[in-house]
Image 1 (cartoon, one colour):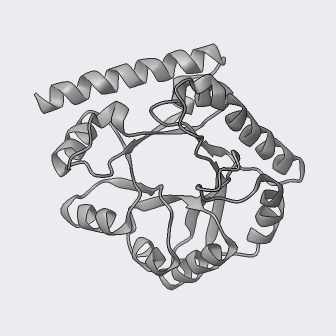
Image 2 (cartoon, one colour):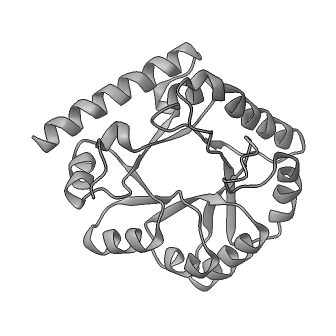
Image 3 (spheres, rainbow, N blue to C red):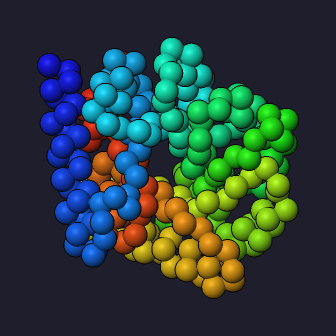
Length: 230
């Protein structure tokens, strides 16, 4: 029954991704689906992996470490706010393949330090607080280009793109400008010679609008897993 429910949700999400991509003249294959497994069971993760999900997102380092010890063959993305004293644990996990939430220069230096110690180059996305919400982390849009330029000096950090979290609203059309601003910011950065291919934006409530605006990654939790496990 669990696998049936998950399969139905996955089919629904994939159909919606395909439709949203089509409306924007894009291919669904351009969008990576990140299954946000925070507070969800090992059984659910394994069932979705069996159904073809390749990427799982966690937002707490301790929970990710515990799940990683019990699972093999999973590609993890870290999507939550990352404290500097937890960076070393992620760098020791070879299958943690992307950090979505680089939000300060001090954190960037810490990632660079621990990536060097673990003989790896860590792919990251810059989190940008496009909405200006004081309760959210992320760089100010106007500070992003300077950060990208400075980050070129970090030999063990591979800056691949931008990420944002839009405010939760009933009508996702209201947050379309947030996604559009992130796209425009990437274009401004590209004009300066820095190519950032990834745009991680859009969650269960608003991923279709995000895809229409250019998201290359969407982070879906409830839409795939259903209600969170307690």
